[in-house]
Image (cartoon, rainbow, N blue to C red; front, top):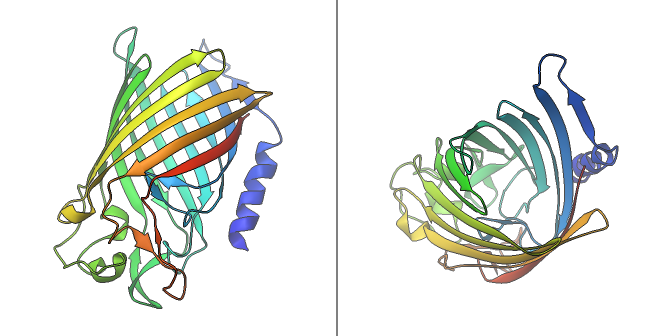
Length: 272
């Protein structure tokens, strides 16, 4: 119930419309924008976060003409993947973009993933003190239609360490220490096929420190179309993640679903 109330608040706030403020000194400008979207599945780095069920997402972004930016974003997630919590993910991020040349931009920032109340189990129904919360630091480069970003975990990767390895995934893992320093390489190419019609190509690679069997590659090929103030999308998402680890059952530990299997994700979004 808490998740539904939080997401309803996001929708209500976003429906109020755009917010844009001009700074009173010089040419510097400040802007605040919002976005909201409905997705047939929430895929993070190719892995379903909603047990392959729909997701409602939305957020706010602040930007300054100096290049500084910050934001908050939220989505429902499955309690089957994030035990003992509110079924909610909140992301807080901030960074700075610097133009290195006319066509090349550097992006440096920090992103915190927070799952209110959620804690990993040491056994079914036995929560530990370990949270799923994760903090990434990242560096990115963009040049025209191409962008690349490297994210490195400044904490244990979503709570995975020696204490939680045995129950963090469907099949238990041997304890090998923490996962701080795990990395994700994110490559993207966006091409406008026609007015309002865009092709998106993505390739990613996750490397989990000390737990190489959890490392994998993910790909995405998507089309999006702007129409009537909305952005409609369809994307094929796939990974080569080990099916033995990237699957989750329901609260009773049954009906396990493979979370990294190839699938079609449909979406409709709107920005304010």
